[in-house]
Image (cartoon, rainbow, N blue to C red; front, side):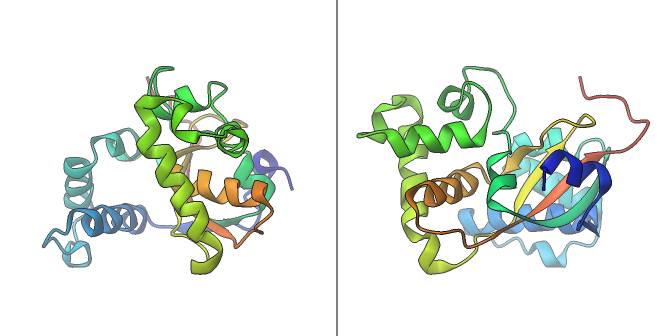
Length: 197
């Protein structure tokens, strides 16, 4: 099923709370920085958002202001490949790897490269991390949920958190290793909300 149609018609998409999504992302950041912060102990949504943005400033574009309705869904391999990499200027990390902005392009460049770290030396650490994740993906089962955003009607969602994971999943599929499944939280701009600047 086409991802645009699925999102437009809300097919097999379960509503999710904003706090749930923020907490999910914050928990992954806390795991990485080995902090004593316990996201489960934070009841106030604004405090959750603040704690996340303090650790990952890019999260502000997703959660400030609260302009999105959130859903949980499982992506097919084709729908995973239809995602766009994180938004930003053309010279930012993922945009240099995938100039057309598509996750499938980034994964394909890795798949075709004899020396992936030479694709772009400024992002070689990210690309090597994707390779490591792809090597582990079939053994460890489905990765953590991605966080996706669709800002405008009928556009393809972009990945707000989970670019490495999504690229590794797509690379695993290209290698013929199989698809272990990928769940995601998707934020869809509310009807009547103005587009972000």
